[in-house]
Length: 339
View: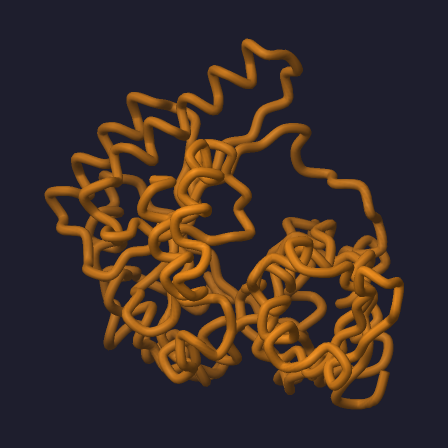
């Protein structure tokens, strides 16, 4: 690994990648996810996103080369595979094309000190006002916001949040990776080398994209439905920033400009068995259905890397109908049908 780039094998985890970067440089990082046990190969082949998405875009926006094995067993780099195939493996699902051995990634500069904060609000503490305002503030906030500015700027533009200095924690980049991965304060970066997931045994994830803010009335209705369901949760990931600057056809990942944020529907459980699986999956399916009127449509879009077995029942028939129509049309029609 040089100061600005390096090769990472597909079988490495994000935690191992972050650890290796930290070993070599304290002022460089890589825009990728917060879950350290996720595999690099799958993460990048499905585009990859993380906390730096507004500042630096997706993981695939920083992939400059790759090594693959073709059907004849030959190892090909970017030049040998050609630009069309190189385009496809950066967000189009690498397993669909060739065996990807490694990616060459370009690192990004990170500040010596970063600021993280966590604010919790109940419905009685204006949570609806906070979420409603967040939808327009988060995608447009300065993507170069520094530690000294965050409290004063958000006090001006986002007073509903009520952010105070006591809510903010200053740390370096690798410590922020540990913080977001829910490791305890003072945890050693060595924990990033653990390939065993310490969070959950079973999970279900679904996704959506939001293009227009959800009204306060609809948010209040949504909270009532979530309280009824009890278990599944929502994670909102803001877009804007760099995501508005990169053309939708630059990579197979089309969800760029025009999206305010992405939604992740999540539920985790520990009980094994068909009954527990069915019960928990049904809960997150219901929450996903409640959001139908609030999210993108024609087609209703989804994030490729949240492999969703609820989608794709008609995949074979639909693919046969559109496979000669071009990659953009295939993506649109499939997602419309699947939903």
